[in-house]
Length: 196
Image (cartoon, rainbow, N blue to C red):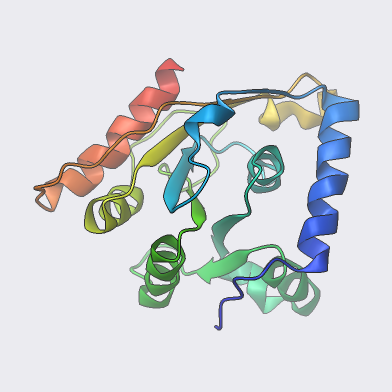
């Protein structure tokens, strides 16, 4: 699938609507935005509890954010039309998706921000489980930082509790690395998020 790297009107309008919604109804609190680079590529890594997590993080940032979405969303015509215009691209879960990885490398080399959930799936316990290798592999091979993000209360949005988003300090990959470092770096990011 051809990846669009220019923000659509739907993306820009949607981000303003989400910002208003999160501010009015959830009194969102954002900390640590100074840890996100003003330019250049970086990998945003976060805990994942709700389908609102990508638009929430994307709305908090001052720069456009790209993210992988499960391929099944692109099988439904109206959803495909929407997600393609909100900086999402498809990934096949459960196996190595070379097209998704090519899109990720292309975005990062082009100086964009890419969101990855190191745990791979939504979890009620926001830090449970082991990290996948993807975020660490990208960071090591392109030598870009991981920016950890801790989300709070996105799993109980129907209760309208205050949402908190905390951006942590960058985690840099080793310059000399082996394949084992991919999972180790992703796990380090997940552990950092747990302590934030």
